[in-house]
Every structure is written in C-alpha cells, then in structure tokens.
Image 1 (cartoon, one colour):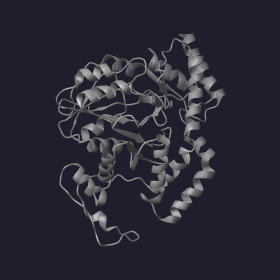
Image 2 (cartoon, rainbow, N blue to C red):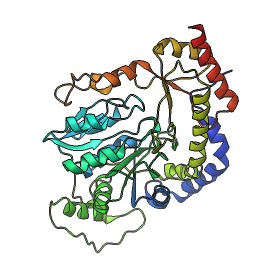
Image 3 (tube, helix red, strand yellow):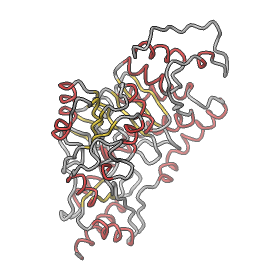
Length: 398
C-alpha cells in the first residue's frame, strides 16, 4: 500500500464542483486583486474566528512582518520566540531589523516554554512571538500574563493552527495580533500563497491595512496619525472610478505590496466551509494513532485546555533516520520537521540573533528525534492502520 504524506489532489476532487464555478466568476469579473471577493472572505474569517478585524495579505511571512511593524517593533529591538519552527518566524523578525531571541521549548507538546520567556526578557525586549506548532496551542494565559507585567506585545504565529482552540478561544484571537498562512499544505490552503493578520485592536488593524498597501490612501493617513507621525486627513475631490483610485497616489508610510488575489480568496472561501470537517477528520486520525502506535514511540502530550487542529502528527524516535527510511521503503510518506533548530541555522549569527551560541537542549533533542506521520482529511482508516502497522513492525524488528 502507498500512503502519501499529503494528497491535495484528493481534496480538490471533492470540492471541484464548488471551486471551479467561483473561479470562472472571478475571471469574468476581471477584479483580480483585493475587491469584493477578498472583503467577503475577510468577513467570513472574522465571523469564524470571532475577531474584530481580519486583514488578508500575500503570504504568512508577510503577515508576521506586517504584525511586527504594526506593533512598532524597531531595528535593535528584541523579540522572544521559539527555535523549533519554520524559518519564516525568525526571518520576519530579522527582516524588520529586530533581533530574534530564542528560548527553549516544552518537551511534552513542543511549544515555547513560558518560564524560559520570562528569563530572557531584557530592556530591549519589545514583543513575544509564540508559535502554535503543528496545531498545538501555546500556554497563552502564562504568555499573556508575562507580556502584561512587562509591557510587551504578543504576536501569535498561527500558520499551523487555524481552527485550534485554547480555552474555547480560537488561535489568532488571544494575543495582540495573529498571523496565518494559506500555503497549499496548510489545513486551510489556497491555490498558491496567501496570508492573514487578525486583531481586536482597531488601531492596529488600520496600521496593518496601511502597511500592506504601500502606506497609501485613507488607511495610510489614519495610520500616520495613529503612529504619532503627524495629524493628517485625506480628502480628495476626484472620484474613484473603475481601475482609477486617486487615493493610491498619496503615501504616508514606507509599506509593502502584500495584497491577496481575488482568486485565492474565492478558493479559500469554499474551503473555509469545510474546515471544521477537515480538522475533525484529522482529530479522528490522531486518535487512531494514539491508540494504535507502540509506546516505544514518544507521542505528544497536550493540555486539556487546548484543542489542536492537528496540522501534523509528530512523534519522537531515537531511531529517527532509520524509522524514516523504513517508512519510505514501505510506501509511507513522512517528514522530519525540523532537522535544524533556528539558533543553529547559518543565517543567524551574532549580528542578527540575540543568542546564536545558545544551548537549548530540548529543542536540539527534538530536532534529532521528530518524525511526522501522514495526517490529512482524505486518509482512509485502512491507510491509517497501515501506517500504524508499518511503524509498529519497525519497532518489533528492533
């Protein structure tokens, strides 16, 4: 039997009848960037997450950069984050000129350790950037308490956590800002790149919308005032007609070009209707893994306060490379996230990292042991049982 690590074609076949007519509708509208389809999707996401503001953008990395900029993270500021995550988390911090400071993670659920956060705070610390890794929510009560006591912003990296919950509140609604990715492999994936920023703060929402579109127009003028750069009201006598928008030529901030395309919004709006079902099926697969996999593997242990969307099912094995080879030889797709913790990456050195020579033992150990098993909504029970049987057989032979 062959069990792929992920099969996007299966998902597309199931929703083809819903997606393709909407794509044709967008094409016929000739409104390809922002516009009605994007605004409608943002409203749908606001309702789904129960959050005041959703601002879409080009990708998940841009979402992080926009959030950092909106939270006034400046060059030389420090942002505390995890080393056990995708490179973009720390890359976004460094790209603003700020300094990522890596602290260790918890061994049971792979999320950032609040006790380590507290110890890493200095006079330069501006924000905390927790990552809800593999769909597992961080200990947000502790993180928010630390942030409040030290006057810090909290920027959630929710790229792998759409639909996850912490004490019945969805990922992206607990910190000052939430950042999502719609990369095709995510639980809610587009037909290309896409991202989203969420917040309950009216001012931050305005600033984010300004930064994502060249710091221009009414959003730019209001953000200019909110950031204390001046008092400005923008009023133009010219009308907005067709493709011509005169407000676009009045710029107040050095921003970015990070707008979402209407085609992506259309695809995502269809998939959003299925997201809870997708996540529910992932949870069923995870439950089968917990029950069936040998105890010789170390499985994650999650808090009762947290409901995962199960973006990945990650186990730990002292025979990581051998197990991955065995799975591959027997037709089981697998992944090895993340083989190099961020504080060990060549890209981070003493000039752009707060602690490049840090010894973070748990993150380093997990990088040597973590193995991702297939988990996607279209997997059959038969395929799940096959993964379990192959994995268990590996340990029997050991």
